Length: 173
Image (cartoon, rainbow, N blue to C red; front, side, top):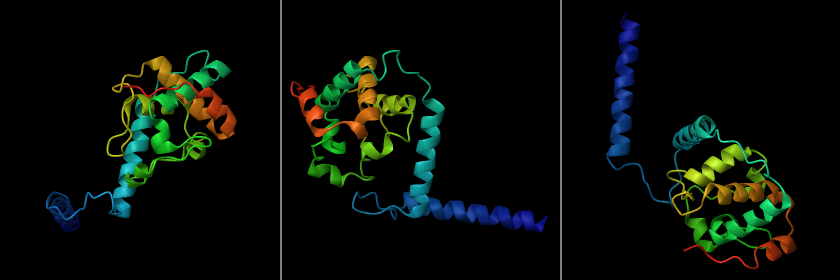
């Protein structure tokens, strides 16, 4: 019984210590400060679990067709995705280096996420990362699915193809 009481007391002390650390201002929220490993681990686990639980809308029948991928490249450019994530032949803008965590290189993560997960992320955004909700930015589901189709093809898109597909892209207001 004493053992359980000791564990309970330690848990209470730990919880109070965490509260003082976070709510007492000792934890720096500056984008220039690295998160402690425990915070990075926890936020990554929460993000991954949330996406897996909530991403459940399947892609449309035309998903991945050439016209959809090209429309997605245009929407990707129009909605400013290139500013933070770059694109074939286009570097991301310097200010994206100030985001914390860094925006992922979509060529590298495209294979790790399903179309359903990417759709959910683009549509809803991710809190505390700088990734906005493109549904709230005015993108409809068809545009979001086209962006996802483009992102899934991104590793194989050439600089010339991206340039020709986005020549008419105008920023969304």
